[in-house]
Amino acid sequence: MARTLTPIAELAQRNDPDISWRLNLPEYAPQAQIGINEPLIRRLAKLAGTGEFVIGTYGGEITTHLPSIDGLAPDGSATASGRATIQQAPLFKTNGADSLTPPIVGLNIDEMKDQLSRKKAGALRSPQAWSDILDTSLRQGINRALRETNINPASSAAFAVTQAISWPILHFEFNSDVLQTSGSLLALNLVLSAWTKKRGPQPHVNQAFNVSMFPFINLDRVLLAKTIGSLSRFVAPLK
Image 1: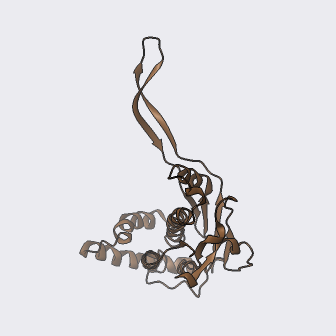
Image 2: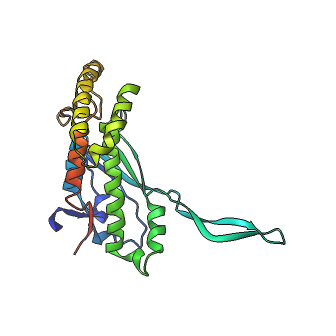
Image 3: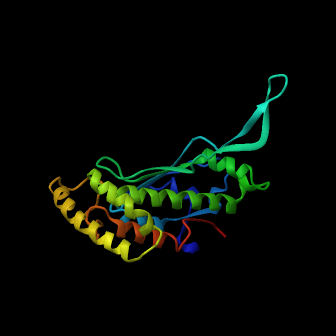
């Protein structure tokens, strides 16, 4: 796998027309020892129907722990219950492809730093620790961007059908009911795709990649990407 990994430190120096890398890790992160699986991400970009991705970092909110209040002391001050309410911050945010931009995956660098700082000592400078949290964030972010790009209903009816069957299909639960619903969705997609073709191709949807048995809501494309992405790491430490 090492041959497929590119050090993060080298990505910023590239002028890549397909994958725009905008990763800004802190100076203490061992960027020369963390590898990105570029071939895998390029393959998933093609499955997205665009051939392109924008992948970067942003400064976002961090997870907070708020103590729960269970009453008042005689002096009027609040008393804590010993429990805490956790407000979990996201590790990423996404924006599916539209007529103006390719799919965008933003990684929340502040939340990643906060999570690593609460792990064992030295995690903030560990290639393995950084690789693990980047792998999780990038995997989940790309999967969501793929869904947003390929499951893009043009009507409230299509949206309702999509929501009804997306969960079982994406979680590999196949039975007669799911297959029957998929057949109905295929028929609906054929009708909807006839309408979308009249609008002409979108700038960030590469027609050479946009092949699907579901011409409008590409669940098969999303499922295939999910399967391929589960077979390899997106980020790994370099030996």
